[in-house]
Image (cartoon, rainbow, N blue to C red; front, side, top):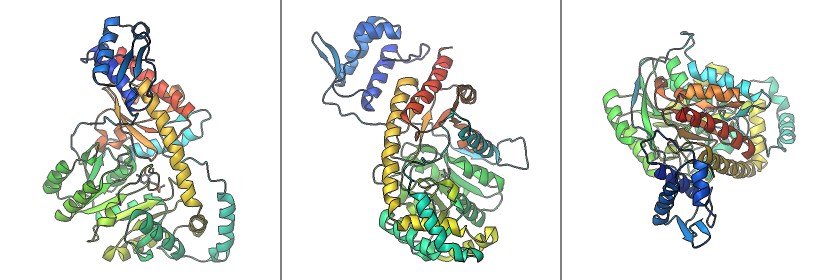
Length: 490
Ligand SMILES: Cc1ncc(COP(=O)(O)O)c(C=O)c1O
């Protein structure tokens, strides 16, 4: 067992050992009945006095986590159930960002998102690179797709010589609305849907529709950097409301709604990018009430819809009776990003203007892409594919949590998301950009946290994609952990 210690930490060494072992038990990395290292072995291994280990074992025993068996040593207490817990408790600082962060090409303003997007494409094509950064879905379990795609193309071949509806094909809108009603408790019809080129286009249409240059927009802090770049590029001013372990801090949200009277709140309420947090029903209800009260629209991005391990509450849009929320979904994370099929749910008077904007943007989404998704949904494979992804991601998330416990310092804390593809690590004060650069030279590509904060401010953090094989995860996290430990010990 490796227990990395921070010699300069104000936390006593025996407490660092206790906390590390406690977390190994709580996350299941140490299972009920497992034997702990002997006092002498652990003392030698960690370079501490035997009395320090005895003290640590004593507190663990007093907490009921381990038990001594006379003559045999210490064992994980059989009454403890392994569980995954998050001790994520980030600072609660609101970030008010009137200007985009500095970027070499002033006129481009797409900043950190562009750089990260291009770097992640390059990482994907570099043989042997471990990509802990990107949000690409796994391609396994899609063996039937080529056959289904050929069938779909044959069916629509006649219509390829025509333009299509800007709002998308009726058949696909019917299928998606049925899915939203049955699986997400939403009250929508095909007439509320607009098919878009990925959810990115939907987000852009909505933001341009509601927000003018100089308007204030509220985002979660951290948030998806693609949205930050979009907002800055159009001259919006951004307020980042800190995330708690339960979602956006609603008390701070209300204060800032009152002070700034923003036009729009952008939220990823389920499997948030980058933290992976899913908000509870009560949080969604309260957020909606606040938005109604302060006359502010909500843009709810559910890009990771369907990748949850356990049931999640209905989206905010399902609670919306006054047409103030717009919902965005996509098939990029559950099928493939290259197909570029996403959708908007827009109810009431805002539907028609948004369809007209869609027409001005690009006429309509590729008929072939729409037909492939439609055929895939009709074939019944989609549900099975989601179940396959959920099982696979659950396994890989467990591997990542174990690796984090093994290699990361005890002063780091992370979220334990109910699905999706990412988790978020709050780091001790170390130079993350430098560490990520060094990791890259060891073949590990990783996204440091600053681009996800408005104005690139915020605490040191990492967004980690856990959808890789356990072997790659172990290697990637060990490289990162060792770089961080080396920095802390220097
Ligand atoms: C939160 C969020 N929204 C939207 C998108 C854009 O997805 P797409 O345009 O491929 O549907 C992403 C992609 O990473 C995302 O993470």
